[in-house]
Length: 226
Image 1: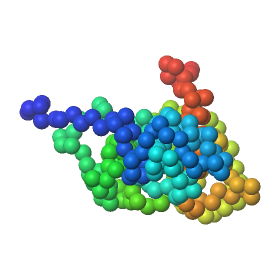
Image 2: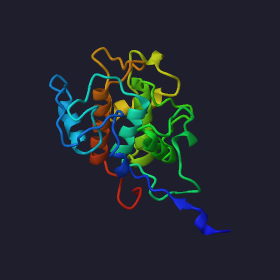
Image 3: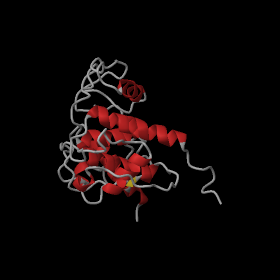
């Protein structure tokens, strides 16, 4: 058997950072001009400087727009440094190899390929253009960080959520973990609003909180403590 039949494909997370966050060009060094009334503008600005998020133009972030699945996945790839640098493929991978509803020439194609090969729990019938709800984004974020960030084991005490009956089956555990780790929060009436669309600002804040938690709770050196 010829060993040279395998071709190494190196679509790295660094390369993905050159892609647009929403299918348009951007200038990474520019400052977003539409965040003056956004409570989490400082968090968004820090994520922009770290290359985690990008705007729809060089000065517009559109914080109140609802985030799509493709945009959310791109954020995960950027934030957690996901890549496929060490994988070998018999042919160049395409987004439609993993997600039938994707487009191989779309701006998000590399991010979907990387996410699929890092096993973050995405469904094969994912629609990249679908607006994600708060529970969908939260569930996928928690799956991603638990898969790739070696979070410490903690005992979680479930909290009462006023609209828990509205959760999609199987998402309640992820939401409880997000609340316990202070990655997400309830509103003043104790509701999570699981079916509401998550805005770009809300998604950015959750990514920021997740990264801060991970930075403050590194995995023990040399493996688990005895």
